[in-house]
Amino acid sequence: MNLDFSFLNWNVASAFIAKGLIFSVQLTLVAMVCGIALGTLLALMRLSGKKWLVAPAAFYVNTLRSIPLVMVILWFFLLIPLLIGRPMGAELSAIITFSVFEAAYYSEIMRAGIQSVPSGQVHASYAVGMTYAQCMQLIVLPQAFRNMLPVLLTQTIILFQDTSLVYAIGAYDLLKGFEVAGKNFNRPVETYLVAAVVYFIICFSLSMLVRRLQKKIQIIR
Image 1 (tube, rainbow, N blue to C red):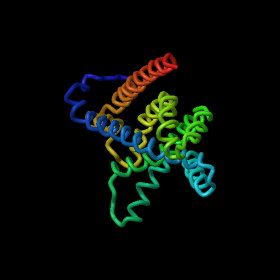
Image 2 (cartoon, rainbow, N blue to C red):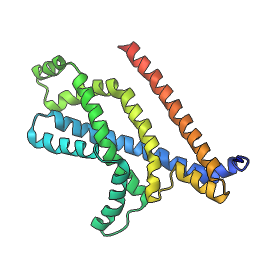
Image 3 (cartoon, rainbow, N blue to C red):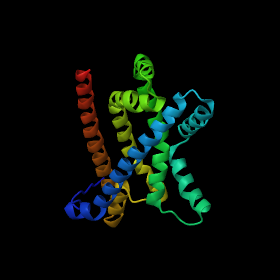
Image 4 (spheres, rainbow, N blue to C red):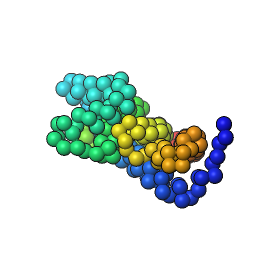
């Protein structure tokens, strides 16, 4: 094979790749924020002890965790326009899908974080007259977020990797940017190789940052 990477320069990166990178980062951040918010709500529902809250939350989490992400992406992209009566667009569909899907995984992380807080603190908050909501907001959730922060960030790195699956609905993500560049210059092999290196550098660097954060949290404890 005669590999030629000479066509890859700043102009190519700004014209084809930068747009995809920006969307991938935006998709990751929005899905992370919405997923953690919805996932925390689901975790609280599952820990409430009320069957009418536990059952739907457990069904939601177990169902989405048992279905491949690419299938969920296709479902939302194809079915939601039929329900609302108009096309939604690949980018918006991807944002909704990832937020809904990742909430199931963030939910299990948050549930473990909430359960890691000593029950004595919960009983003490009830003893001083706090309600369930006040206990969770002021006592449990701040500690749970700190305990689970490295795991939440690790899941976010996995989320960034999974954003490459939006190619299935034609959204212009980082991988799509490399693919378009490869087709324009007739160098698909080179662009896919560089794409793999870029994904590795980003994810490995973030993993190292998460590891350092985890060590700092351990030192604080």
